[in-house]
Every structure is written in C-alpha cells, then in structure tokens.
Amino acid sequence: MSAQEIANKLWNLCNVLRDDGVTYHQYLNELTFILFLKLSEVKGFSDQIPEEYRWSKFVEETDNVEAFRLYRDFLANVSSKTESPSIKDIYTNASTTLTKPVNFNTLVQAIDKLDWYEESDRDVMGDIYESLLEKNAGEKKSGAGQYFTPRPLINVMVKLMAPKLGERWNDPACGTFGFMISADHYLKEKYDYRYVLSSEKIKFQEEEAFSGVELVADAHRLALMNARLHQMESNILLGDTLTSLGETLKGFNGVLANPPFGTKKGGEKPTRTDLKYISSNKQLNFLQHIYRSLITDGTGRAAVVLPDNVLFEDGDGQRIRKDLMEKCNLHTILRLPTGIFYAAGVKTNVLFFTRGKKEERNTKNVWFYDMRTNMPNFGKRTPFTEKAFEDFIKAYTGGLTAENVVKEYEGAIDEEKRNQVKDERWQCISREEIAKKNDSLDLGLIADESLTKSSDIGDPLDIANDALKELLLIQTELENLIKELK
Figure: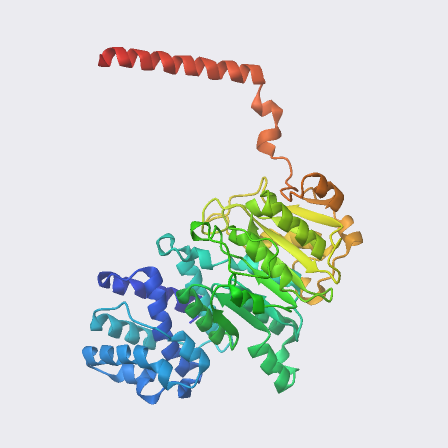
C-alpha cells in the first residue's frame, strides 16, 4: 500500500470519531499519539517505549474499557518512564479528546490492519505523516493552515538555498518543521550522505544540522513527530523567538522560514534587547531576527516568506528594509501568486538574501520575479506544483532547468548570467532606484493585461456617462419606492 493510500485511510478514520465530538485538528493530535506507538513497532524503536505500553498490549486487549484505561495511563505517565528525549517531548502534557472506549479500540484495530510493510523506502512513514499534516492544513475548519507552507514552495526555496553538509540551518517559526525536513531530504538526495560520511558526521546531520522554534504546543508536538519519522533527532524548542530565547539563536549558515502573519496581541512588542527596531508587526521583527541570526562570513543565507505589507510599510518598516539592504545582499524577491496559502487572499513574497562580511552597502541590485500578475488561479483545477516555478528557477540560477537544479546548482548568484535571461517577469532594480522610492520594495510587478487593453476598457467619457445614467435610474426607482411606502 502506498504512502498516500495509507494517509487517506488514516484520515478517513476521523469519521469514526464524529459522534465523539472530535475535530479534524484534535483528531490529528490523537492520531499522533496512537500512530507513534504503532510506528515504534514498524520502525524498530519500540524498546524506547515502556513494555506495559507497547503496541501489542493495546491490540491484544479485548476489553475496550481496560484498553482505554491503559491508553490514558500511557498518555499521563510515559514521559516520566522513557529515556528517549523526543518521546518525552511528544507526550508532554498529552491528553485524549476521546470519551468512548469503543472509538479508541476502533482506531487501534483499523491502524493495526493497515499494511505498513509493502514499501521499504526509508522516508515512507514520514511521507504518510506529511500527507496527514497537509490534509489537516487544508481543512478550513481546523485553522491549521497557519502552520503549513505549501510543499512545492518549500522545496523550491530549499533547492535555491542549496544547503551543504556540515552547515547549521534553522527555522525560527517552524510550524510542523517542513522546511528543515525538506532541507534534510535535499542533502540525502544530493549526497546520499548516510553511505559516505563518518558516523560522527552522520550524527551531526541527524541531531545538530537542523533546528527550529515553535510557539504553539500542538504544532510543536506535530513537528517532533514529523522529524522523528524522517529519522531526524533535531532540537525543536517550544517557545517564542521574539522573546529573550531568540537572542541565543545565532551563527546559522542558513535560515528558511514563513513567520506567522499579523501583529502581537494588543500591539504588544517583543521582549528582545538585541533588535535595533522594535515593532508591533511580527513579520518585521522576525525579519530582523533572521538576518541578525546568520553567520557573518559572507555565506550566511536565508529565504523567507513575507506578506506585501513588509515591502511597503513606512516608519519601522522602511528603517528595517534599509538595515536589511545594508547588512545583507538582498538579491532576489519573488512575488508569489495569490491563493496558494490556506489563508485566502493573502499576498506574499519570498525574500532571498545573503549576510555580508561588512555591515553596510551590501545590496547593489535587487532582482524581482513576478509570479502574480496574469497567472492562473491555483486550486483543484490548476494544482500548485513545482512545475509552476520552472521559469523562476531558470531566471534565479541564470539558465538552469528545474530538473538539473539539485545536481548542478551550488547557490552562487551570477549577475552576468541573470542578465542573459529573457523573461518579461524578470527585472533588475538598482539600490539607488529603490532608495529614491523611500526604500519601498513593492516593485517588480508587470502590467496587468486586464487593465492595459485599452480597446477592452473603452473611452473614459463614455464610461462616466454610462455610470451616471445608471445612478440616475437607481435614484428614480428609489424615489418611486419611497412614494409607494408612504
């Protein structure tokens, strides 16, 4: 059975719990607790689970009430009885939303009957879980989309950042850890490092190369599970990057992130002493944190998803953009299409930049690519896949095809090759021109065909006269209605 088929079956089991009042998001958390037990058996780490709580105990128990009692005991006590740090974290403060023992037993028996063994690929279990996370994010009622960045976008950002073995990467708002898992997969695909590195270096890749911070406890739990199922023992902290915790996060070779949208509650400002400009806008604070957390040897790099307001906001926004362009080479901005995030209508961009060795005059030119204007509406009829990025990848790399980018691209920005790319969506704007526009980066969008075809628009005077006639007609009808009502 394929990973997608298993994920679909697991997701459909949620219907069993409808009469228990369980939401999709609660179901995914519940499934995380139960699924981890089963997968500890499949993946061969059941010895890290105390013997009285192992999967077979639940499968073999014929009394629904006793099995459910054991399950609740397991959730309450496993963290204090295991030596595994990740298991401790996954089950910290765990509790069940189930109330009916029969529903718990139905889940256990259904999960046990699934054929987990047909595919031997080492990342199948992780793929199954990623599919469940995506389904949960797509459920409008669950509200989980805020923790989920579309996988095609994540994968393209990772490929263009071109992580290297031995580097330290971080996501300061990691959600379910998708960026770091994609970066790890990129390195496995490019170098197949498990077969070429020493055991010490493999240990670094599994435990230290990738890290993250997540504020929301449920998302943090899902991130831990996701990492473990991808054979990563990464350090994923539960906390707020915009507090003093964030001051310890520095010296990274790379950062990949999609910081949460919005402002701090009540306009509250972050409790950081190391940020030059303190704002109530969370994205501006995260942006400052990110470029300040990069190593300053000229190789520290980042790709960050940010909404449009970060590109044009005055005051602190202008000052932070200027600071970014002084300290970093902000070489590329991708104007993303609308409708690709689960929050409808959000207009977003990806900023790509490299921290300089010096603290000023690092940005000379900013290249913009417009994937927004005159683009199809992505949805069920037009799926959003990596194929949509083919032309952008070619422009960004200076000519490489999407198929060859993993094998051939090492992350260098070649201005000369970029200049040779002919694409109306691709344009270069100098730092001097940006300065003249008060450091606004709300640039690089091409003309909208629907607005520029003058033959379709008609003569402005005729349009105004037609509008006036309609308004007068409406006024007459309203006056007649008032007379009748009187």
